[in-house]
Amino acid sequence: MKKISYERIYQSTKYLSPLGDVQHRALFGGYTLAVDDTVFAMVSDGELYLRACEESAQYCVKNATSFLTLVKRGRPVLLNYYRVDEGLWRDHEQFLQLSSFALEAARRERRQRYTMHRLKDLPNLTFQLEILLYDAGITNEETLRALGAEQCWLKIRALNKRLSYKVLFALEGAIVGLHEAALPDTRRRELLAWFNTQPLTNEIHSGS
Image 1 (spheres, one colour):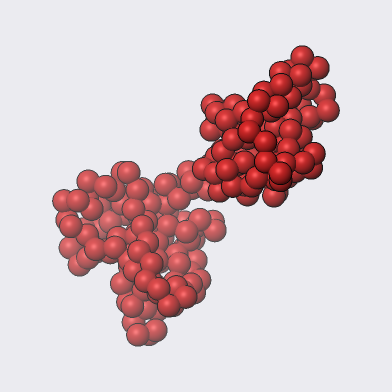
Image 2 (cartoon, helix red, strand yellow; image 1 turned 120 degrees about the horizontal axis):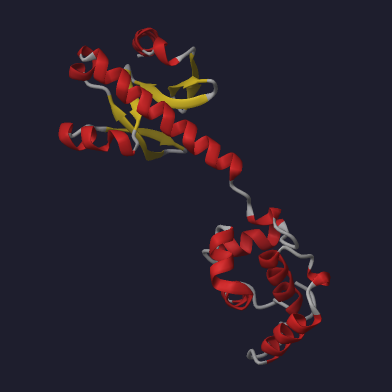
């Protein structure tokens, strides 16, 4: 089967050469195909799979394409890669166009990952607090701002009762872009007054 996969890799790199220098690497029993370290296709069991994207959605629906499933840690994992059938291999123009769509979609996602700020990159937010926010469903800065410090605090307090007013200050600082110590006194008093209206538990203390 490895020989068949290598034959398919050779065929794929030949057909896809107009997109650039196509490199392959082993992954989960299959092989990734990439241009400039951007993975846009995979080869598994002698079959080529292209990364699905918005531009290829119509083709996938029309042709009822099958998607790649790999076994990871003993479990089948369905990946967002659709099989290139013999008809598509014969249609070189469409094959190259769909491959170009796959590569560009992968490049867009890669650019977005590089430009997207993690929550812990905001003022006051530690790695531990980032994990709590993620567990509470607050995974990005937009959601953090939309909810506000008080609602975010309530959501993560549901996961960790040992949550203090200092975390509330930290969240507010992250939203407005200030270290919590630099928050205006008026806002600090507002937050502390709100904090004092929350039901007390024996576990609340001044730490995080």
